[in-house]
Length: 257
Image (cartoon, rainbow, N blue to C red; front, side, top):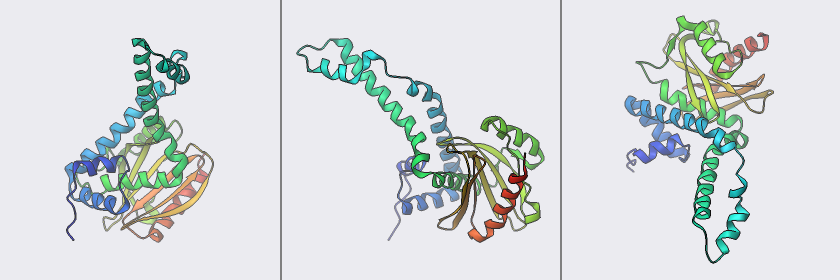
């Protein structure tokens, strides 16, 4: 059976995480083979996160008394409805819709937890790992600047793990957008050119969560939470290949002050 071509609706649904697993895998394959589409999807993901962050303060404000839902319903039942009340009802619907969109991001972690973290890392791996021209913003030579950038945006000290003893060398990093706020993305590779992506972001529940393996077709990931930070390591490899890297990262982070 011929596969359906990837449409603009598919790309938007991928950004919004509304695809079924089979279709999502097809879109990921398409993005891996189409750099321009991959770049555009990355920008759409970043834009969505920026919009949610920009309107979050408005959505968090209490609804004014004059826009109380019970009052508006009672007003609509009267024979004659003043124009201002109709306008207020429309405004309430707008604020409610905006609140629902913003809440979409805030509720996702509560319903998905560490799975959301793993999905975010996998999505960024699909976008950036195949990119041979500019997969990162700052190179490995800017390790200190990367650490400062991540620390500033995540509001806590963030280190850049050295995985050279495990055979993986830092290529560099960039800041990326997720549904749960900014995240630091680090990229490593080995002598064979196998790339590994690590995503780091704040985890709202805090504390620690044991490591969990995730499999997405040919892509595997390991996600965990340590000291209130969520980590996810992703590569086109067996999870057993990632476990030594995870142990090394956790050992270094446990000893960090």
